[in-house]
Image (cartoon, rainbow, N blue to C red; front, side):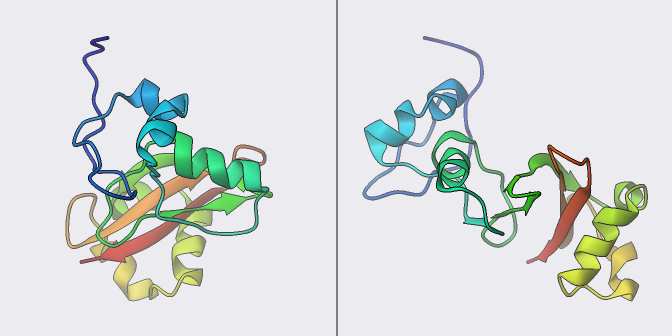
Length: 138
């Protein structure tokens, strides 16, 4: 089936992984079953095993400088919003606090750019709406 969409990142898994996957094959778990693929680097926080499996095996990952980290809140996986710079991060004090709690210094916050050497990855809690983020540098 041709959809016009393709997953551009190479999944994790044993052996040679396919270079292009249909996002729907990721979402329904068929790519994970067929190729042993997984898509999330690290899932942070305590979540039920079914949630961790859904993120790792049925959710397209994102490209980060280091291994991507999927953030959690309220005992569940948070929704990935996307990479952001300081211009966007300024709108979310809760996400700024998350970046600071992760070890980034306050003087570094204005250096964060969406597509630069220091990028923030923004998430939103599916339950309470809290914004979370972490910064990653090359």
